[in-house]
Image (cartoon, rainbow, N blue to C red):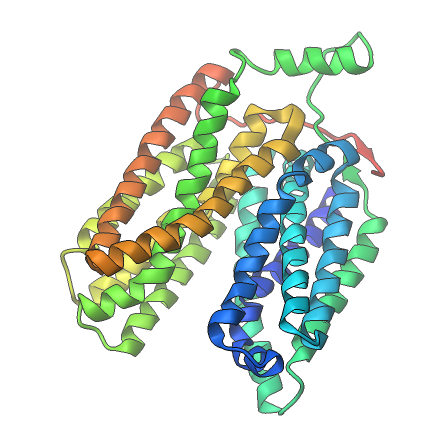
Amino acid sequence: MGENIRMASSLYINYILLGMINLIIALHMGFLTVQFNTDAAAISMLISAIGIGKLFGLSFAGRLSDSLGRKPMVITACILYVIFLVAIPFSPTYAVAFVFALLAGVGNSILDTSTYPALIEGFPKRAGSAAVLVKAFMSVGATILPLMITFFIAGDMFYGYTFIIMAAVFLFNAIHLITVMFPRPNMVVVEPGGSGEQEEKKGVESYFTEKPVFWKEGITVIFIGFTSVSLLMVIQTWLAKYAQEIAGLGESAAINLLSFYSFGGFITVILLAVMLDRVFRHTTILMLYPLAAIAALSVLLSVSNYYVLAGIAFILGLSTAGLFQLAVTLMAEFFPGKKGTSTAFVTLSSSIAFIVIPYVTGLIDRHAGVSFIFLFEMLIALAALVLGMFISIRYKKVFNVPARKSILPVNTDLVQK
């Protein structure tokens, strides 16, 4: 267990840094436009390049995670991020920076498809909590980065110091991970007797009451991954504009609603980390949270009072954060023999949401107005509720266990891989 704690600590440090990387291009947009002699739209394309690189990486990252092991893949992701962070502030042209942004996206896909399975394998009895904590540490990183940038600006220092410090932490963590033992990938509890591949196959088969089918359970969880990210993106992108145009709030008050939303998201991942598998099963959360989001959105569309809207923003944060991590955990439970590959499918659906949802909601805003975006958000929440109900039913049939009992197999077998 002590070795698993060491592993988890290093993995969570990576996600503190990833929470910072998700914002680092946008928050340095002014510096980068000057460096590359371009405009804000071009710099925003660097962010899109990270998404494109992530989509490309997902085509092979999951399979490599399953075949090579989690440890070498996590270390590879760290090194790719070191290269990206050092390269961006010193890139001579925009085209060079674009290539390194693609590389960062590949690193993101490798990190996701190796970290989530490693956490699930290291903490099988608290897999949901371990996965949800990833979101909490990303929130920590998103809080630290603006403070770092403010510090360097106040001292009139080179903006690239932020990148260099983060690269140094990634490099140190990669070196530390070399000494850390990871759980053996894709292990399940096996029955005594037999040997090698036959024994493991027999263990996988005895793991289920009814064997899960990818085109049923798998596709449902993939769509849950899509809806979970979609719910987040709509609120983060359009809540402030809705508050200004429809509720009549001032710009500062409208932006402050996102602070309440973020705080709600942070609180919920902490609660889930503590209560998941002890009080609630993740299938219960996948039904309860969309239902709460639908109720909150209904109130949002009918009030204009700032304090009520602040409360609604907080509830929306509570009811939308952490769902993606729960979907990843659920996928690993249904398909324990290939956790890296199954994680890649869920991550792919989230990447598609990052591309599709901004485009669709932009069209809705242009042709119908921002209020209709939140009606669209209610439809997404309703779809998430239906998916959650279906997967809850299938979960009980596949595993035949009480809804609050953890069924992930215990794995204490450690190897240097």
